Amino acid sequence: MTEWKAYQDANKDRFLNELLHLLRIPSVSANSNHKEDMLHCANVVKQRLEEAGADIVTIYPTDGHPIVYGEKIIDATKPTVLVYGHYDVQPADPLELWHSGPFEPIIKDGKIFARGACDDKGQFYMHIKALEIFTNTNTLGSNIKFLIEGEEEIGSPNLASFVKNNKQLLKADVILISDTSMLSMENPSIDIGVRGLSYIEVEVTGTNRDLHSGVYGGAVANPITILAQMIASCHDANNHITIPGFYDDIIEATPAERAKLAQAPFDEAAYKTDLGITALWGEKGYSTNERTGIRPTLEVNGIWGGYTGEGAKTVLPSKAFAKISCRLVPNQSSAVITQKILNYFNTIAPAGVSVKAEEHHGGEPYMTPIDSIAYRAAAKAVETTFGKEPIPLRGGGSIPICALFEKELGLKIVFLGFGLDSDNLHSPNEKFNLENFYKGIETIPYFHQYFAAMNV
Image (tube, rainbow, N blue to C red; front, side, top):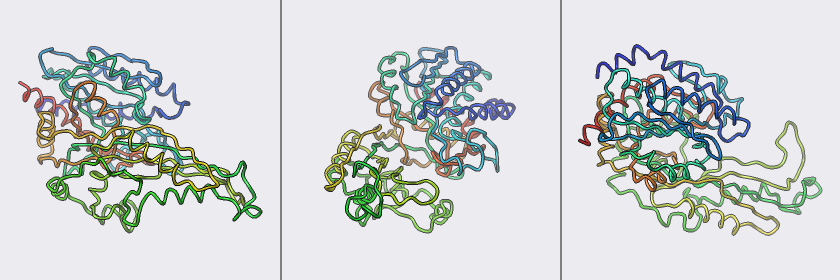
């Protein structure tokens, strides 16, 4: 509608400044030093929801970081959309790789650079601005609820109990999430699924203390060497995961789905150039888009041990550590996979070391039906503002609470993400294109309009 676009164009600078203010808050949920920042961020989100026209906005405390809930109910007989997002962000480390301060947002070449710019402050804030547009143009045709949590980046440990205890509060007809990406502005896409997650930490211990590597080297096991060998054994020559039973429960993508995925534009040369590499790596027999969407993975997220300071220290370390995550596909269980990995590391540990492997957190894979009213409304909304029908794809990331929402609330989820895979999520120099931010605000109202119309 032209009045939506006119209101957005008249207020776009303010929209941006409000987002920049939100991005200056270091709401890092994983670091206890940022507890007050988390509370401050929750209060800012509450304020923005109230200013946008929400009739009720409440901050709910949890055993961890608070949840912000808001709603605009115009008519109980009309459809209700529950918008989910998260105001917490990943740690900014390593700081030395940022071109500017992670919590000092700058705009360069039409992009906002800051931690949380795309994941997920910039994306959930689009929905708050869409509510403001509805409110100020008196055009809202459906009810809207907001659930903005502060623990997504640490596995949402307190969200399950909140959802279970507040089913009536969260009652809706669909859940709308913008925490995913699209192919490009030229080739819009909608994720029809996200992968699950299994995350563990492994500790390998050898001797009872660090040793002189000359006096003892070659006589006792080096935990770093052993851990490296154990990790290397998780993949074979075809980069197939070797953990027994890892692939047992997978529902393989159909030839039709693989054929549709193959139609998605992919510029391998540009992909490699963007990443600064000369060759791609992955499971044999699958394309890059398949490896990052329909196939499970096992990756090392961190490894350390021994002396890592300046200069040299000839030490044979007592311990070595690694953090390992697996991305899971439909029908894989995070609990089952986690146990298989833990068992594997304990089984293959050689004599002379002990292994302690522990679970961090996990989440289940999720697929959304493309024949649902919600998906069709989202696809029509994207086509309206982009002028092109979106391509349905599977996302490579994880949103652990998706399966929880469906189980407890009985609701399907539609993903309406406007980020790009090149936005450096979880990495230094995270960004969000201004064009994507504004296009999201333009598109979201159409979803609500079409969803309400299709539910009549």
